Image 1 (tube, helix red, strand yellow):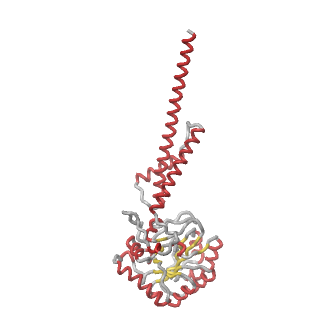
Image 2: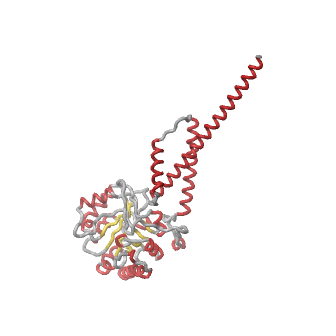
Image 3: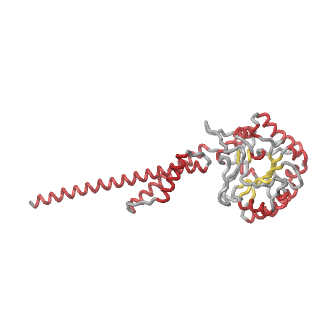
Amino acid sequence: MRNQKSNGRKIVGRTAVVSAVFILAAMTTTVLSGCQNAAKKETEVSVKNVRAEAGTDLTDTERLSAEQTNEEQSGAGVSGIGDSELASTDQQAQSMESDLQARSEQSTAQTLPDNNKTMSGDEKTEKKEPPEGWELTLASEDWGLSFGEPGTQPRGNASAQDLAWYDAYYVGADSEKVIYLTFDCGYENGNTEPILDALKKHDVKATFFVVGHFLETAPEMAKRMVEDGHAVGNHTYHHLDMPTISDEETFRKELDDVADLFQEITGAELSAYYRPPQGKCNADNLKMAYELGYKTIFWSLAYVDWDQDKQPSHEEAFDKLTARVHPGAVVLLHNTSSTNGEILDELLTKWEEMGYTFKPLSELTGE
Protein backbone atom coordinates (compact mmCIF):
# COMPACT_ATOMS: atom_id res chain seq x y z
CA MET A 1 0.00 0.00 0.00
CA ARG A 2 2.83 2.35 0.94
CA ASN A 3 4.56 1.57 -2.38
CA GLN A 4 1.35 2.24 -4.31
CA LYS A 5 0.99 5.66 -2.65
CA SER A 6 4.63 6.42 -3.37
CA ASN A 7 4.24 5.41 -6.98
CA GLY A 8 1.08 7.51 -7.18
CA ARG A 9 2.88 10.56 -5.84
CA LYS A 10 5.67 10.03 -8.38
CA ILE A 11 3.16 9.85 -11.24
CA VAL A 12 1.42 13.01 -10.03
CA GLY A 13 4.79 14.74 -9.66
CA ARG A 14 5.85 13.79 -13.17
CA THR A 15 2.51 14.97 -14.54
CA ALA A 16 2.93 18.33 -12.77
CA VAL A 17 6.44 18.72 -14.16
CA VAL A 18 5.29 17.90 -17.69
CA SER A 19 2.38 20.33 -17.35
CA ALA A 20 4.72 23.04 -16.11
CA VAL A 21 7.02 22.46 -19.07
CA PHE A 22 4.09 22.76 -21.51
CA ILE A 23 2.83 25.92 -19.80
CA LEU A 24 6.31 27.48 -19.86
CA ALA A 25 6.72 26.59 -23.55
CA ALA A 26 3.33 28.12 -24.33
CA MET A 27 4.26 31.32 -22.46
CA THR A 28 7.56 31.54 -24.30
CA THR A 29 5.83 31.03 -27.66
CA THR A 30 3.28 33.73 -26.80
CA VAL A 31 6.02 36.19 -25.81
CA LEU A 32 8.06 35.54 -28.95
CA SER A 33 4.96 35.71 -31.14
CA GLY A 34 3.96 38.98 -29.49
CA CYS A 35 7.48 40.34 -29.99
CA GLN A 36 7.45 39.35 -33.65
CA ASN A 37 4.01 40.83 -34.23
CA ALA A 38 4.98 44.04 -32.43
CA ALA A 39 8.21 44.29 -34.42
CA LYS A 40 6.33 43.65 -37.64
CA LYS A 41 3.74 46.32 -36.79
CA GLU A 42 6.47 48.76 -35.74
CA THR A 43 8.31 48.14 -39.01
CA GLU A 44 5.15 48.73 -41.05
CA VAL A 45 4.46 51.98 -39.19
CA SER A 46 8.09 53.09 -39.51
CA VAL A 47 7.98 52.54 -43.26
CA LYS A 48 4.77 54.54 -43.50
CA ASN A 49 6.19 57.34 -41.36
CA VAL A 50 9.34 57.48 -43.47
CA ARG A 51 7.24 57.66 -46.61
CA ALA A 52 5.21 60.48 -45.10
CA GLU A 53 8.40 62.38 -44.11
CA ALA A 54 9.76 61.98 -47.63
CA GLY A 55 6.56 63.38 -49.14
CA THR A 56 5.31 60.03 -50.50
CA ASP A 57 1.52 59.83 -50.48
CA LEU A 58 -0.15 57.36 -48.15
CA THR A 59 -3.56 55.92 -48.78
CA ASP A 60 -6.30 56.88 -46.32
CA THR A 61 -6.24 53.33 -44.93
CA GLU A 62 -2.47 53.42 -44.41
CA ARG A 63 -2.57 56.86 -42.77
CA LEU A 64 -5.36 55.79 -40.39
CA SER A 65 -3.54 52.55 -39.59
CA ALA A 66 -0.30 54.39 -38.83
CA GLU A 67 -2.06 56.90 -36.56
CA GLN A 68 -3.94 54.19 -34.66
CA THR A 69 -0.81 52.08 -34.21
CA ASN A 70 1.21 55.07 -33.00
CA GLU A 71 -1.50 55.77 -30.41
CA GLU A 72 -1.50 52.13 -29.33
CA GLN A 73 2.29 52.09 -29.01
CA SER A 74 2.38 55.30 -26.98
CA GLY A 75 -0.39 54.21 -24.56
CA ALA A 76 0.16 50.46 -24.28
CA GLY A 77 2.26 48.81 -21.57
CA VAL A 78 3.64 45.29 -21.06
CA SER A 79 1.93 43.13 -18.47
CA GLY A 80 2.14 39.52 -17.35
CA ILE A 81 5.80 39.11 -18.32
CA GLY A 82 8.65 38.53 -15.89
CA ASP A 83 11.80 40.66 -15.77
CA SER A 84 14.03 38.02 -17.38
CA GLU A 85 11.52 37.32 -20.14
CA LEU A 86 11.06 41.06 -20.79
CA ALA A 87 14.84 41.54 -21.03
CA SER A 88 15.05 38.64 -23.48
CA THR A 89 12.22 40.12 -25.55
CA ASP A 90 13.91 43.54 -25.58
CA GLN A 91 17.16 41.98 -26.79
CA GLN A 92 15.34 40.19 -29.61
CA ALA A 93 13.49 43.37 -30.58
CA GLN A 94 16.74 45.37 -30.57
CA SER A 95 18.40 42.71 -32.69
CA MET A 96 15.53 42.79 -35.18
CA GLU A 97 15.56 46.60 -35.24
CA SER A 98 19.32 46.65 -35.92
CA ASP A 99 18.87 44.14 -38.72
CA LEU A 100 16.05 46.18 -40.29
CA GLN A 101 18.10 49.38 -40.02
CA ALA A 102 21.10 47.72 -41.66
CA ARG A 103 18.94 46.43 -44.51
CA SER A 104 17.37 49.87 -44.94
CA GLU A 105 20.77 51.57 -45.08
CA GLN A 106 22.03 48.99 -47.56
CA SER A 107 18.96 49.50 -49.76
CA THR A 108 19.32 53.29 -49.60
CA ALA A 109 22.98 53.08 -50.53
CA GLN A 110 22.10 50.96 -53.55
CA THR A 111 19.30 53.22 -54.84
CA LEU A 112 20.24 56.82 -54.02
CA PRO A 113 22.97 58.77 -55.84
CA ASP A 114 25.85 60.03 -53.70
CA ASN A 115 25.85 63.67 -54.77
CA ASN A 116 27.84 64.78 -51.75
CA LYS A 117 30.85 62.85 -52.99
CA THR A 118 33.57 64.84 -54.69
CA MET A 119 34.30 63.29 -58.08
CA SER A 120 37.16 63.75 -60.47
CA GLY A 121 38.07 62.90 -64.05
CA ASP A 122 35.72 60.56 -65.88
CA GLU A 123 33.52 60.18 -62.78
CA LYS A 124 32.23 63.75 -63.21
CA THR A 125 31.04 63.11 -66.76
CA GLU A 126 29.29 59.85 -65.88
CA LYS A 127 25.56 60.40 -65.44
CA LYS A 128 23.76 58.34 -62.83
CA GLU A 129 20.46 56.92 -63.98
CA PRO A 130 17.48 56.56 -61.63
CA PRO A 131 16.00 53.09 -61.02
CA GLU A 132 13.98 51.65 -63.86
CA GLY A 133 10.39 52.80 -63.73
CA TRP A 134 11.13 55.63 -61.29
CA GLU A 135 9.59 59.03 -62.02
CA LEU A 136 10.13 62.34 -60.23
CA THR A 137 6.93 63.73 -58.77
CA LEU A 138 6.69 67.40 -57.78
CA ALA A 139 3.85 68.52 -55.54
CA SER A 140 3.51 71.65 -57.69
CA GLU A 141 5.18 73.38 -60.62
CA ASP A 142 5.67 76.38 -58.32
CA TRP A 143 8.49 75.73 -55.89
CA GLY A 144 7.17 75.92 -52.34
CA LEU A 145 8.23 75.20 -48.77
CA SER A 146 6.53 73.96 -45.63
CA PHE A 147 8.14 75.18 -42.40
CA GLY A 148 8.05 73.47 -39.03
CA GLU A 149 9.77 74.49 -35.81
CA PRO A 150 12.12 77.51 -35.95
CA GLY A 151 15.65 76.50 -36.84
CA THR A 152 14.61 73.28 -38.59
CA GLN A 153 14.77 72.48 -42.29
CA PRO A 154 11.57 72.96 -44.29
CA ARG A 155 10.04 70.44 -46.68
CA GLY A 156 10.07 71.21 -50.38
CA ASN A 157 7.85 70.17 -53.28
CA ALA A 158 9.99 67.05 -53.55
CA SER A 159 12.47 65.35 -51.26
CA ALA A 160 16.17 66.18 -51.48
CA GLN A 161 16.82 62.50 -52.30
CA ASP A 162 14.48 62.48 -55.28
CA LEU A 163 15.76 65.81 -56.61
CA ALA A 164 19.33 64.53 -56.42
CA TRP A 165 18.70 62.13 -59.33
CA TYR A 166 18.62 65.19 -61.61
CA ASP A 167 21.39 67.08 -59.78
CA ALA A 168 18.81 69.39 -58.22
CA TYR A 169 19.15 70.82 -54.71
CA TYR A 170 17.25 72.99 -52.28
CA VAL A 171 18.92 72.34 -48.93
CA GLY A 172 22.19 71.00 -47.56
CA ALA A 173 22.95 68.63 -44.71
CA ASP A 174 21.40 69.42 -41.35
CA SER A 175 24.50 68.31 -39.45
CA GLU A 176 26.27 71.68 -39.40
CA LYS A 177 25.26 75.33 -39.34
CA VAL A 178 26.13 76.29 -42.91
CA ILE A 179 24.45 78.85 -45.19
CA TYR A 180 24.68 78.85 -49.00
CA LEU A 181 23.91 82.42 -50.04
CA THR A 182 22.39 83.11 -53.47
CA PHE A 183 20.96 86.17 -55.26
CA ASP A 184 18.59 86.42 -58.23
CA CYS A 185 19.50 89.31 -60.53
CA GLY A 186 16.67 90.44 -62.80
CA TYR A 187 17.96 93.96 -63.40
CA GLU A 188 20.22 96.58 -61.84
CA ASN A 189 18.83 99.43 -59.75
CA GLY A 190 21.79 100.44 -57.61
CA ASN A 191 21.55 97.80 -54.87
CA THR A 192 24.02 95.24 -56.21
CA GLU A 193 27.09 97.30 -55.27
CA PRO A 194 26.30 97.56 -51.51
CA ILE A 195 25.49 93.84 -51.55
CA LEU A 196 28.89 93.07 -53.08
CA ASP A 197 30.56 95.42 -50.58
CA ALA A 198 28.98 93.60 -47.62
CA LEU A 199 29.97 90.20 -49.00
CA LYS A 200 33.54 91.35 -49.49
CA LYS A 201 33.70 92.77 -45.95
CA HIS A 202 32.68 89.40 -44.50
CA ASP A 203 34.68 87.35 -47.03
CA VAL A 204 31.53 85.50 -48.09
CA LYS A 205 31.34 83.87 -51.52
CA ALA A 206 27.83 83.84 -52.97
CA THR A 207 26.20 82.77 -56.23
CA PHE A 208 24.40 85.30 -58.46
CA PHE A 209 21.80 84.02 -60.92
CA VAL A 210 21.60 86.43 -63.85
CA VAL A 211 19.23 86.99 -66.78
CA GLY A 212 20.01 88.50 -70.17
CA HIS A 213 18.74 91.98 -69.28
CA PHE A 214 21.06 92.23 -66.28
CA LEU A 215 24.09 91.29 -68.38
CA GLU A 216 23.12 93.72 -71.12
CA THR A 217 22.63 96.68 -68.78
CA ALA A 218 25.11 96.01 -65.97
CA PRO A 219 28.19 94.35 -67.47
CA GLU A 220 30.47 96.03 -64.92
CA MET A 221 28.58 94.40 -62.07
CA ALA A 222 29.01 91.00 -63.74
CA LYS A 223 32.74 91.64 -64.04
CA ARG A 224 33.01 92.58 -60.39
CA MET A 225 31.21 89.41 -59.34
CA VAL A 226 33.91 87.42 -61.09
CA GLU A 227 36.72 89.59 -59.70
CA ASP A 228 35.40 89.16 -56.15
CA GLY A 229 35.38 85.38 -56.54
CA HIS A 230 31.64 84.78 -56.67
CA ALA A 231 29.94 82.18 -58.82
CA VAL A 232 27.50 83.37 -61.50
CA GLY A 233 24.70 81.03 -62.52
CA ASN A 234 21.98 80.89 -65.16
CA HIS A 235 18.53 82.40 -64.58
CA THR A 236 17.58 82.12 -68.31
CA TYR A 237 17.80 84.93 -70.84
CA HIS A 238 14.19 86.12 -70.88
CA HIS A 239 12.94 84.94 -67.46
CA LEU A 240 10.19 82.85 -69.03
CA ASP A 241 7.64 80.50 -67.53
CA MET A 242 9.80 77.43 -68.12
CA PRO A 243 7.16 74.68 -67.58
CA THR A 244 5.49 75.96 -70.76
CA ILE A 245 8.64 75.03 -72.71
CA SER A 246 8.72 71.39 -73.74
CA ASP A 247 11.00 71.81 -76.74
CA GLU A 248 14.60 71.02 -75.85
CA GLU A 249 16.07 73.44 -78.38
CA THR A 250 14.10 76.37 -77.01
CA PHE A 251 15.07 75.38 -73.48
CA ARG A 252 18.72 75.09 -74.47
CA LYS A 253 18.75 78.48 -76.19
CA GLU A 254 17.44 80.22 -73.06
CA LEU A 255 20.46 78.91 -71.18
CA ASP A 256 23.07 79.08 -73.93
CA ASP A 257 22.39 82.75 -74.69
CA VAL A 258 23.11 83.71 -71.08
CA ALA A 259 26.28 81.63 -70.98
CA ASP A 260 27.55 83.07 -74.28
CA LEU A 261 26.92 86.70 -73.32
CA PHE A 262 28.46 86.22 -69.88
CA GLN A 263 31.64 84.79 -71.39
CA GLU A 264 31.75 87.60 -73.94
CA ILE A 265 31.55 90.21 -71.16
CA THR A 266 33.80 88.65 -68.52
CA GLY A 267 36.00 86.21 -70.41
CA ALA A 268 34.99 83.56 -67.87
CA GLU A 269 32.70 80.57 -68.16
CA LEU A 270 29.32 80.70 -66.48
CA SER A 271 28.99 78.33 -63.53
CA ALA A 272 26.79 75.35 -64.37
CA TYR A 273 24.04 76.29 -61.93
CA TYR A 274 20.48 76.83 -63.11
CA ARG A 275 17.66 78.47 -61.18
CA PRO A 276 14.20 78.31 -62.77
CA PRO A 277 12.57 81.77 -62.97
CA GLN A 278 10.13 82.17 -60.07
CA GLY A 279 10.98 78.60 -59.08
CA LYS A 280 8.61 77.27 -61.73
CA CYS A 281 9.55 73.95 -63.28
CA ASN A 282 8.42 70.42 -63.97
CA ALA A 283 10.20 67.09 -64.09
CA ASP A 284 10.91 67.46 -67.83
CA ASN A 285 12.61 70.83 -67.22
CA LEU A 286 14.81 69.33 -64.52
CA LYS A 287 15.74 66.45 -66.78
CA MET A 288 16.61 68.79 -69.68
CA ALA A 289 18.77 70.97 -67.42
CA TYR A 290 20.47 67.85 -66.10
CA GLU A 291 21.20 66.57 -69.61
CA LEU A 292 22.68 69.97 -70.50
CA GLY A 293 25.11 69.62 -67.60
CA TYR A 294 23.40 72.02 -65.19
CA LYS A 295 22.71 71.61 -61.50
CA THR A 296 19.30 73.05 -60.63
CA ILE A 297 19.31 75.16 -57.45
CA PHE A 298 16.10 75.89 -55.59
CA TRP A 299 16.10 77.36 -52.07
CA SER A 300 15.05 76.61 -48.49
CA LEU A 301 14.79 80.18 -47.21
CA ALA A 302 13.48 83.34 -48.88
CA TYR A 303 11.12 86.20 -48.16
CA VAL A 304 9.06 88.74 -50.13
CA ASP A 305 11.82 91.17 -51.10
CA TRP A 306 11.30 91.64 -54.85
CA ASP A 307 8.40 94.11 -54.90
CA GLN A 308 9.90 97.59 -55.19
CA ASP A 309 6.64 99.19 -54.14
CA LYS A 310 6.35 97.12 -50.97
CA GLN A 311 9.83 96.73 -49.56
CA PRO A 312 9.91 95.05 -46.13
CA SER A 313 11.18 97.02 -43.17
CA HIS A 314 14.50 96.13 -41.60
CA GLU A 315 12.66 94.55 -38.66
CA GLU A 316 10.44 92.43 -40.91
CA ALA A 317 13.44 91.24 -42.90
CA PHE A 318 15.41 90.31 -39.78
CA ASP A 319 12.43 88.48 -38.28
CA LYS A 320 12.03 86.30 -41.37
CA LEU A 321 15.69 85.68 -42.09
CA THR A 322 16.83 84.90 -38.55
CA ALA A 323 13.82 82.97 -37.24
CA ARG A 324 13.69 80.63 -40.22
CA VAL A 325 17.39 80.18 -40.90
CA HIS A 326 18.49 76.56 -40.42
CA PRO A 327 21.49 74.28 -40.95
CA GLY A 328 22.17 73.72 -44.65
CA ALA A 329 20.02 76.69 -45.70
CA VAL A 330 20.11 77.73 -49.36
CA VAL A 331 19.10 81.37 -48.99
CA LEU A 332 17.51 83.28 -51.89
CA LEU A 333 17.66 87.09 -51.88
CA HIS A 334 17.06 89.55 -54.71
CA ASN A 335 19.68 92.08 -55.79
CA THR A 336 16.94 94.59 -56.59
CA SER A 337 15.86 94.91 -52.94
CA SER A 338 16.87 98.16 -51.28
CA THR A 339 16.25 96.48 -47.92
CA ASN A 340 18.76 93.77 -48.75
CA GLY A 341 21.34 96.36 -49.77
CA GLU A 342 20.84 98.21 -46.49
CA ILE A 343 20.79 95.29 -44.03
CA LEU A 344 23.12 92.68 -45.54
CA ASP A 345 26.20 93.74 -43.56
CA GLU A 346 24.26 93.60 -40.29
CA LEU A 347 22.47 90.41 -41.33
CA LEU A 348 25.71 88.58 -42.07
CA THR A 349 27.03 89.68 -38.67
CA LYS A 350 23.88 88.39 -36.98
CA TRP A 351 24.07 85.00 -38.71
CA GLU A 352 27.74 84.74 -37.70
CA GLU A 353 26.80 85.48 -34.09
CA MET A 354 24.24 82.67 -34.32
CA GLY A 355 27.09 80.29 -35.16
CA TYR A 356 26.63 80.04 -38.92
CA THR A 357 29.37 79.89 -41.52
CA PHE A 358 29.08 80.45 -45.27
CA LYS A 359 30.05 78.10 -48.06
CA PRO A 360 29.79 78.28 -51.87
CA LEU A 361 27.37 76.10 -53.81
CA SER A 362 30.26 73.93 -54.94
CA GLU A 363 30.38 72.57 -51.37
CA LEU A 364 26.69 71.69 -51.59
CA THR A 365 26.85 69.99 -54.99
CA GLY A 366 30.09 68.10 -54.29
CA GLU A 367 32.22 69.59 -57.05
